[in-house]
Amino acid sequence: MWSLLRSRTRSAAGLPMVAYADVTTGERVELSAASVENAAAKVANALRDEFGLDPGAVVSLHLPAHWQRAAWCAGAWTAGCRVSLGPTGGHTGRPDLVVCGPSEAEQLTALGDLAVVSLHPFGLPLTDALPAGAVDVTLAVRQQPDAYLFDPPSGNSPALDVGDRVLDQDEVLALAADLARDWGLEAGGRLLADDAVDGLPAWLAAFAVPLVTGASVVLVRGDGRAVAEQERVTARAG
Image (cartoon, rainbow, N blue to C red; front, side):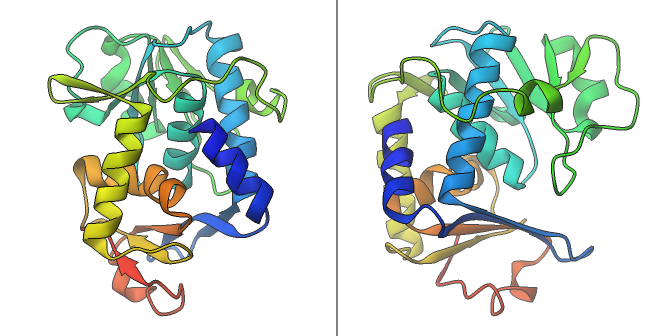
């Protein structure tokens, strides 16, 4: 996936890839392909360097539909980690790292080492106290180099727990391509993924689907119909 993301950056660095919009607050953030690559490299470097994770380590992600979901999926897969998604991720053992938003931190401390991600529009550090054993990863990610420092994973690197199976990176991309076809998303299109879509499709919509199709995605908190026209969406997830 890292090579595919870099290829996209070389061809369309400044074009939109991932956007997040909250229909209630009006918050909106948009990341170009270059910004997504930068975020992926920083997150991946932090996973390898700050947290000492080797390729194949299990990272359990508990993040809402937000641009940080895209950044952490991209970063975990760039680092060669095996991702378990939310409470239904399928991994039955103890993960090597749990990543969550601030509201989930208290309830997830028993799962293992806990990295808490700021959901501030610009990724500013957290201001509220965290439970014992949890760390704010904002600075750990920000201080990492913009370029990925380690060997990238291959297409057959373990990538995603789905039920009792572990999909490799090529299989994740193939599944994302299937979803894109089901949703009518084409290259250069713009996908809308709001609260109406959940589970595995919602996670793949955040990063893998726009990556494999050359499209962009708008992750919406609330009913996406409120912003569909202004976001110029061409397809809807779900």
